[in-house]
Image (cartoon, rainbow, N blue to C red; front, side):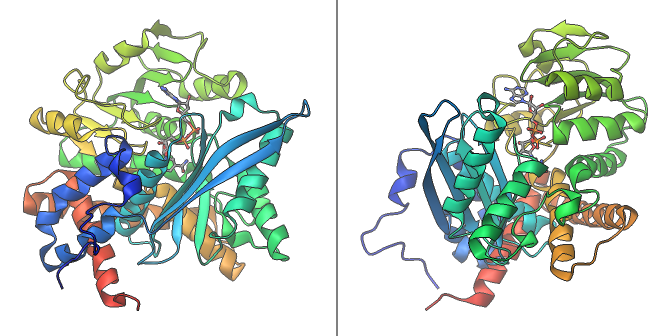
Length: 432
Ligand code: NAD
């Protein structure tokens, strides 16, 4: 079947035309790199370049001082060929539609890469939640949930935590959706508190996945985790847990950067003490047992492994040449630009891409969703064992494809995932 894009000869939808340099543009470049490896399925590839559904909502709330503030919210369902949409919700002042579109697409790739039965989706609100009181944050979360309520649901699209969203926010989202539905619907979001149908192991799952995939890859390149030096950008849910697991395995966490600053200790930071400091002070800044570095110097730190676990587009053509690590494990989504990818490949730095490296979170979200449907809950040992099994199996498959086609692990993961998505697309056929 040949593709006729539309009767007017337009090649891309109008809302994509002016904004192709941001995260969505990066995603499109990543897709273009895999098309030559898709064989007959390549004829469906245009599907991957268009989100299935985009919802932009106004989120008005009354502030504590009596005035009304408006925030812009988004929910994008990139692809649902393999199952309901699945992906987190981000609250950040710099969230854009391009970013949410890219994040939703990376969720499609990630979910297919680890073979959980979901499509890809993502949401966001353009807000700095640190400027809101708890009451304002709750009202904002509830109004946003109500606005996107027309397209989410346990069988339609299941949100989860992402940057600046947590178990409490998932509890408010679950409650708001349930109130509107008239019955308690625990399966509408994952990453909930344990007492509301959450899963053991979910909070640590993304960091545990980062650690599992990192340790697997290290064996392939002869890198010993015990005694290795690691630099971590972002010390939240993903970076903090990954740092803890690597340090428990004997690695030295030599540098950590977050929104408040950059700290360094040659002999390794005391990770439990740093986690406690961040829990109290909200940032690594001011941690007593460390040197302070200028933020930009973070990229020059002598280390074996670098874990970006903050935001997108951190590793660029401007700093990729300075990175001294042998391996980069992408805890964050989209931290490396395609130009930086090329520089790192040239320099023989192994990049474990987000779409496999941080898939542990959605894998345990899948377990949570399954447990909610059956109202039967598993032990933490069982959850962690199943998580590790899925991550190792997915990584082994991707490693094999990378070796076979002599491509990067990112391209290999996209090959595996895009084939699964497009095969589902083909089997389902077009309606009508
Ligand atoms: P979080 O809110 O718990 O932590 C974010 C961290 O990034 C914080 O330490 C913050 O200080 C730091 N940060 C923010 N801006 C920064 C800046 N400009 N420079 C340096 N550090 C900065 O968020 P999280 O859940 O850990 O998510 C981090 C990344 O991991 C995001 O890209 C997210 O999409 C991705 N991710 C998260 C999950 C999950 O389960 N939470 C799953 C997969 C991927």
